[in-house]
Length: 406
Image (cartoon, rainbow, N blue to C red; front, side):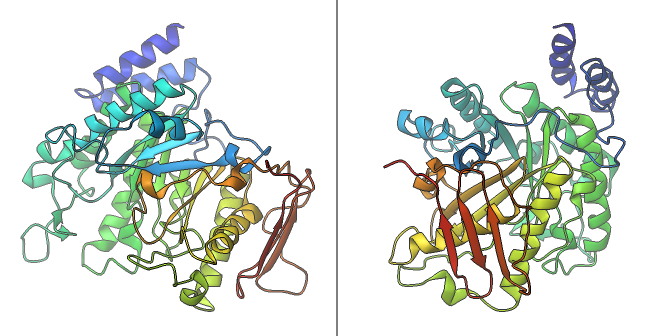
């Protein structure tokens, strides 16, 4: 009880003394039996206080990444309360509190979800790079802490200025913002968007190399500040090597796990028609390996699949993405399937799918197992009798569920 009390005190003083709080809260964490530096003897951070998770059915390993302009109503909260883990998008609650910072809107939403189900773990969204006007950091970050372009003017990303994490003062301010959210008691960790974007092919500016190293340093310091009792999740960029597992205890493998965006597509467009070989098959295989490896290390992963919500092949498209997830899933692997055409990160693009209630059981075969003699074909069996087969090249898929509710 004493350790918990002082842990809360640490979070409350974080806004003024972020450098000191890391040391003091580390001592409290040690008193509670946690690692104090975010890095156990294995050399990488792990999750010590995970969300609810289990093999009984897919719903026990589901998460929701959602937001909406309006506040959640009772129907929304009933849906979100079913997920073991939830996080919000930037627009959450904007209509009801247009002048509030996104952090304060997230805190309000998190408290509503926690009231509906106190066991749900909730992560606070923060963008690692973009200085969004609605963010609390926008009013706190001086011009001297922002990244410059080569001509000395402020560098921009999607029209907004960029945090310069090469500066220790900027990293400290960023961590202080995360601790501000944690001090509310509404969150169980943070979701950091664009975690490795600077190292991706999408980043072509001279500052990318320096920011790649700086973001790694930011995550090391952030994970240390939050401790392994909380989740520090790195949202990775697709088609980019994932190395943040060395400095963060959780990751979302990409925007689109074994899938694509298809903004504005109608129901006649199928995922198969947008699947490009061999690149898409290999990227999917890499994501399967990534979630299997993270689980083996005691780390948490989120697989955010996408696809059509309607049309003749919508169920098959979802089955393909879910099958790929089940091939690689291990302890603390979480799954979601969102609309690829509209509302990709909103509550209206989120559902509790019928398959979430089907029986699964513990796996009786290893993760990431290829069919002998094949490059893209995988299979896996589960103790309930459920079997999974998927071909990442042809997108042939078959999940034989042992039992599903009628």
